Length: 169
Image 1 (tube, helix red, strand yellow):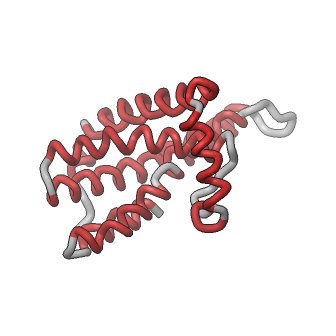
Image 2 (spheres, helix red, strand yellow; image 1 turned 180 degrees about the vertical axis):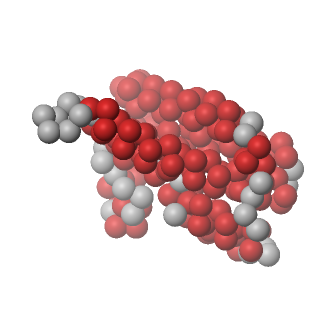
């Protein structure tokens, strides 16, 4: 879903008309790296070898992460084309903690991207509590920052790939 929104983004001629598309991209982007957290469920099962489950989960997670990074790269390029390369990178630095927070909301508080439409008051109520009392929720902010840093390092490594420089036409 985020890759689809990112591909559509440059097709919009006006910056202001692109903002809803960019917002939808940001809403769904955390779902791509979220798949990495499914590794938390990895446990031995009698009938299936652990390595099989590991290979399956990693293949899904790495594919999702690759598609997510491609979408992030397209968004970064679009922002840079509308503003500057520095602004594109600043956007990445803002997107990573927002993504870490989104993953936290999904993994631990069990919120879904669609809940911003289905149950916005409950969702924003939970977010408000986390922001209002940050010291009471160190796990939240540790996870958010840790995931943001890990994703940024992984994105920078992904950017070194020759294929990262190409984008769909």
